[in-house]
Amino acid sequence: MKGDWKKWLLTGLMLTAPAASAATLWEPRLRVAAEERYDDDLRLGTGDGQLMTKVSPRVGIRGQDERLTLDGAYAADMLMRHGSGKLTLDHRGTIEGRYLLSRRLRVDSAVRLYRVSDPTSLPRDGLARSTSPTFFTQARLGFTGRATERTDVRVGYTLEAVKILDAGQKAGYAHTPTLELMYRTTRRLTLGAEYRYQGFLYDNTLSQSHGVAATLRYRLTRPTTLIVRGGPVRYLAPDGQEGGWVPRVNVELARDGELFDLGIAVGHDLVGASGFANALWADYATVSLARRFNHEFSAFGAASFFRNGRAPSRDWTTFGSTPLVSQGYAVGGGVEYRFNRRMAAQGAVDRIAQVGVAEAAGAAGDLTRNVFAVRLIVTAW
Image (tube, rainbow, N blue to C red):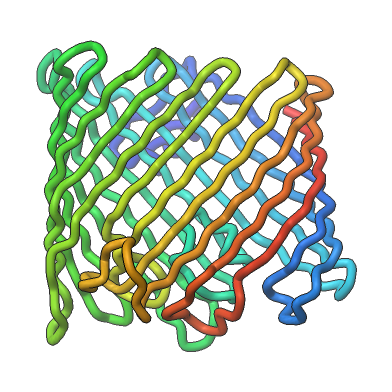
């Protein structure tokens, strides 16, 4: 019976993947972050900020062998406001896995779960426009097969769900199966084609989309990669509503270097699982960077902008202004000093603002806030 628990754990996580080998190495992990912050808390409703204490323990486990890579973690965020004495508890969970079924076929999966009292902490800007607690989950499953020495075929499925935890609110879902073909023309250049279906479900109403896209992936340098994807999307609205065409464009530049990291993403797409509508068009732009000056000291920063409205609105473009468009931004940065391998201190400043709110779920209010924080991070394992 020894090792059977690994078999059942992997079966549950990877669905059809077989059991892990007996040589799998399991490594537990524990990290605790303690933070003191000044926050213009959007949930106070007074317009005044407060000093707050935030404690975030995070436990996880990593398993790895010649075929398997598995990472799982759970984190709790406990936030206590000194002025009001109010205490909130948020939950975050992630699990990611990759398993080589054979030399030509692999399966990968990922699940992310969030139950947060602060919707601006979700990983998608501007979609759940509310100050109420929110539940968000994203699950992904994919199979990638090597058809030839240069050609890969990938079949994938992604589920997203959002529920604003307020009276009268409905859950929203987005189901996205995809089929993608990638061909490596050279060591640096890969070309691809993708078909994507989207099913958006909200308040017992279903809308759909069909889209095709071409992909270009080019390695500019060893640490820097450019990805460009674009194509048309046909949106099929629910009965009695107007459908239409929406363009899909995405440009990404990623650099992962020894001393400097950079990530840039700009695009326009059709998205769902917003918590208040079937489907939205979304414009987005993000920039993130990190600079390591030496083994002890580093700096980091990020900025993002979003703009969205109901699909397939004639006003999908980022230019101009309409009464059915919402937009906002987030910007922040900080520094980190590592005392040793297990302990680090950070200082950070963040600003989040929603500069236009066309539609909202529940009591949206003003989402603008400023956060000034200092934190100590201890990695026990």
